[in-house]
Length: 284
Image (cartoon, rainbow, N blue to C red; front, side, top):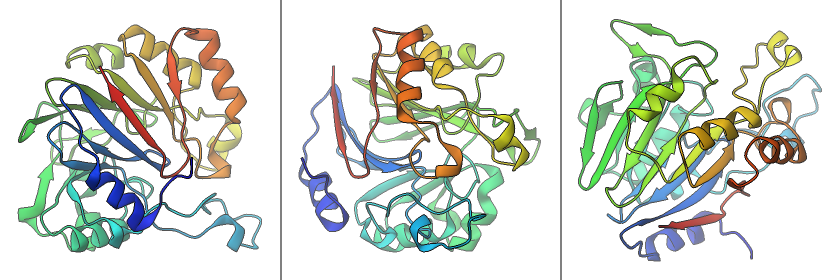
């Protein structure tokens, strides 16, 4: 089936009615998703909808060209109720993306960490449209309850003003729940932190791994696919979405390696990877 893009994708989101105990998710690339729960709100998480294509670059040292065009432009996003940004790296909190979404969806609120507030300033997001994401805080957005725990990319970083630098989050509609890990490794205490939250039905984890070659170029990786499978198995998720492994050639693993590592650790686990614009529908 052809995956929809642009205005067609927005129309598909708007037309789809999501019943209780279900959510619909559209893959935007990297760790970006649009999610529509049973409250019919559309929530965007870590959208990165700008940037040059790798094919347009002739410099072989250029690391950050996109492998594919974004399935949406920021100004296509007319249906956002809320945008969640897990940390301040540009592929998760993009000023250009947020400015376009904020203009196209004038009632959307933008939730970001204390470390990301300068990016929201650059995007022109006024204070009344911001939600401050931090651990120990819950946001109730109608039926939807949002909770946050620390992530570690590669280590936990926290200060008294800006709070935790990296966050994972739970979206809980009461009848169904989705976990989004942001960028993180499997640090000591991460599983315990996840267990303080209601159990998610589906978890999205960045599992492109890391290695000495990427570290030498200051390219931060994440947990390995095997570790992601271990997390999903330990916290009893029904489904794992393997993320952060499609957008940049310099920071991803072969799809066969991702699949084989997960199969080795948790052969019974349902696992999904997606193409940009692809729809995933989950129902209990």
